[in-house]
Length: 469
Image 1 (cartoon, rainbow, N blue to C red):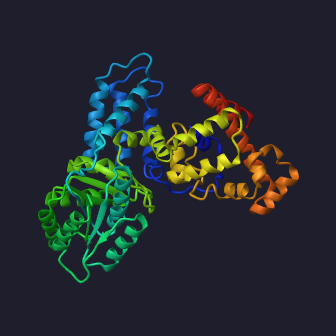
Image 2 (spheres, rainbow, N blue to C red; image 1 turned 90 degrees about the vertical axis):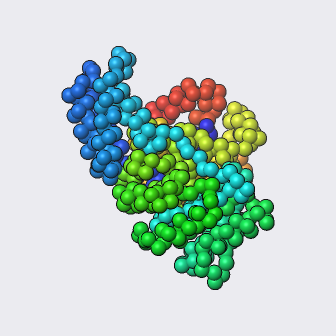
Image 3 (cartoon, rainbow, N blue to C red; image 1 turned 90 degrees about the horizontal axis):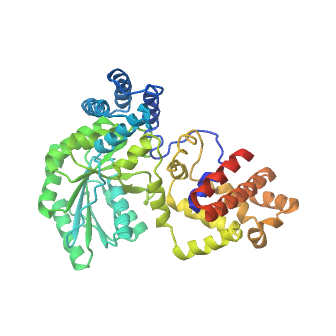
């Protein structure tokens, strides 16, 4: 709760709009769907006439988001059939009922359930496939890091791109960054043999997961397709993943279809979801190839990867936030002993700038700041025009680092002269220092109320803060 509280109470500068994972990707679709649902506002019941008008706008919104035409039509037909068959409760407005139906169908469209990766075998073997430039090599490193930390695996990266030396060098660099060995064979031009030897190397060195990075293709090339099919036949992977750049729109869907016909892959990886894309591939690809989207990549950082959760994605598209993902990310940085210590300090009103700084560091480890804030229900729309980038806390950290140990521990002693010195030392203004101290006081009050009164305390604290401002 401490991390979420800081995200809610800190004010950020609103200079310009910046692209962030998910928020930009589905921003236009979210706004269009919201306008569509307004058609049903004020209506006493769902009828064929008002549903038809609403879904006409929904279909147009999906097509504008680059969703496959057949998928969009099938989606709206299903929603219409379910909406007309619903008995709307008196406590539920027609617009609310339609939002629920669309949410459930969006989740179903994207696969319904979260699909895990198959890492059975000794070693388990994951074969990566995809076009050149899709982010396949980078994702191989991300996946190795993720499964090493979350599944306690001992991975090996195998470099089978014999056509692009830079790909082998890139994999070596990634391996060093995540402390994962990389198997290469200099001068060898047979990727099938390299893959087989890599698996044998893993067995000899007690490594239980092999991730085979293959050569990317510039297009659907027959010779290259035969090559990766031969690699798959030779190593019999437990999992074959198709990596696709989500920014390529419907081309991503068509390419996935071609690869699936040749490889019969097990799942899809959508990369570059932090880009300015309309998101149609994520909504279409599951239906077209009938294979689950298993992972999403959301940036260049090696921890910017996550499992694909259809229901949570539907939440985000419809502006409902994603508090489950926020809690999961917080738990990854969670230290039970430290949390107990912090809880006691908050209860005694002893939360200081050292604790505040530690919480900021935890937030930064969790990922993009604006994306984290948008996961809180009701916050996403409020901050969509705000400029909150990964450097959002730099000024705050500079101010805190300019304080003496006594000032960090005892904020009450921060008088006018001390604030002037801190502003000069941090390269900020006295107004910025005053604003941070005010934010800190507000955050401390919210935390104490939450600790004492739970959810009711949180609501009352935020209400009081809004009233004062």
